[in-house]
Structure formats: C-alpha cells, structure tokens
Length: 180
Image 1 (cartoon, one colour):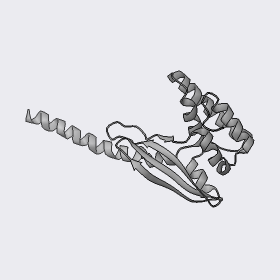
Image 2 (cartoon, helix red, strand yellow; image 1 turned 90 degrees about the vertical axis):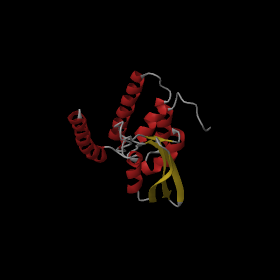
Image 3 (cartoon, helix red, strand yellow; image 1 turned 120 degrees about the vertical axis):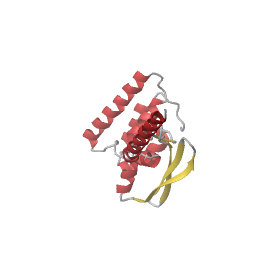
Image 4 (tube, helix red, strand yellow; image 1 turned 180 degrees about the vertical axis):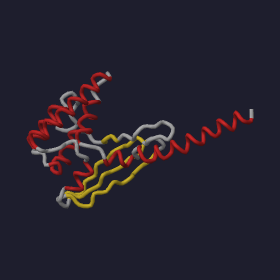
C-alpha cells in the first residue's frame, strides 16, 4: 500500500513539474487577451449577441473573417490587427496604457487608456482569467458596443467615415441601436 501511494504521489509531482511550465509559457494572461483584441473580434462579439445556435455562431465568425480579409484586400486596412498595437503604432496617439481597474476570481476589468490628439480616451474590456486547473486561454470582451467603439477606433485604423457607417449597418442590423 505504501508503494502504491508513493507511486501515485510521484506521478502527481512529475505531472505538476511538466504541466506548470507548459501552462506558464503557452497560455495567455488576461492582460495579454486584452492586448490581442482586434476590431474584427469586437464586430464578431457584437453580432454574436443575437445568435443562439453554435452553427450560427461559427457561420457568423466565418462571415466576419471573410469580411476582414476582403476589406483588407480592398482598402489595405487590417481590422484583424490588435487594437493595442494599432494604437501604439499611430503617430497621433500618445501614452497608450493597459490599466487593471477591477479584478475578481474569474474576470479582470481593464482599460486601454490613450490620448488621441490631446483628447483622453478609455476603452473598457473584461477578460476571463485563465484557470490553472481548466486549461484555456483568456478571452477578452469589449464593454462598449460596436456603435460606441467604432468612432473611437476608426481614426487610428484610418477607416473612412463612410466605411465606418457601412460596417455598423452591415453587422449591427439585428441589434437595437444605443444612440440615434
């Protein structure tokens, strides 16, 4: 019996030693999830709210991916580029920071704070925290709707106002508008 317990204990220690570095090096933190959030992700999250079935969710993800690819071919604007990286690379944007504003056991709330042409702007995000025992990458979610976030990011992404309105009309037609 003693050998049985020590054998299982040894296996547990070996798994823990192997498991921990893999988890640490290959899975994102909640802050990394916010850093990797894209405008295409926000569009997808916004239209996903009106969908019930998994098949429709996958179909809508495919539609957003195809749109992003086609939009980049047509205009040269990559809406699948990270918001954080886009802001960092924009010469009109200063002082880009990700700030943790609230944290719970399962979620962390962050703000991407930046100054665009002397106007301070904050973009709030919630990120699911990865769990040590439930291996999954952290996911970020915008806390602003598409109609609120598009005007804030369109200048940094260099999206023309006409295109911005069309993107909103195409992807948020099923959602109630929050502004007139």
